[in-house]
Length: 285
Ligand SMILES: Nc1nc2c(c(=O)[nH]1)N[C@@H](CN(C=O)c1ccc(C(=O)N[C@@H](CCC(=O)O)C(=O)O)cc1)CN2
Image (cartoon, rainbow, N blue to C red; front, side, top):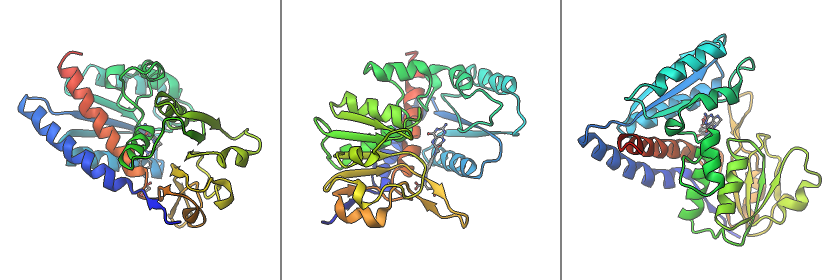
């Protein structure tokens, strides 16, 4: 069996080209989409992701700013920073890079972001909208996976989608997006007994647990589509997915590699959400 290797870059390029055109049109109306990313602390991977976001936004013709704060920043200071960004009319998208240091209440911070600028889609109002099937900001990684499914014309309706991982960033919204498209969805997580029993049934398998190579050839259904969200770093700086790609690839029809699979789509859907925010804020929606 020869699998289709799903490179996010290929799908991302088309979306980024059309976003660039949309940004140019907005600029003619005097609107330059503006994204601010706030990062607290020195996590190496987070810093890399933030740089990638900044570069992608600038390349798409947007205004982009990174606010870097020291690890010792208090929760109150962070909330004040967000408050002033909420009130800044030149900023359409606000994102707080996760994870935050332990002394800061992550949920409180995410809930302080104006929902109309919440380009990560993590605010409870936007999550609620997703649950009831209303248009909203969709979290970037699951949104990117939906775009990849669409691009490769992988059927969703009536299929069994199994999601490993129940984070607010990926697992939970991913399941809801697939459910909204009439998949039968099973959530698995660290306490799931007999994990393989579920993964082997999956027509679409989404793996987002952050443990290198835990899914092997015996865990997948033949002919399925595998989406690997994992990004674990080895001591020598190599990035590994949650799926043992080399062993799994020959058993499935579709698979994302790590790196260059879903990662580029996460950043692209952030750009999409920022343009969407700029449009709706400027129209007073
Ligand atoms: N506020 C947020 N925080 C975090 C999110 C998020 O969506 N919003 N997601 C992750 C990190 N993340 C984006 O922030 C992210 C992770 C990985 C990649 C990526 O492109 N990875 C590469 C490999 C890594 C590399 O080359 O250095 C790939 O898979 O090709 C992009 C974004 C947690 N925090």
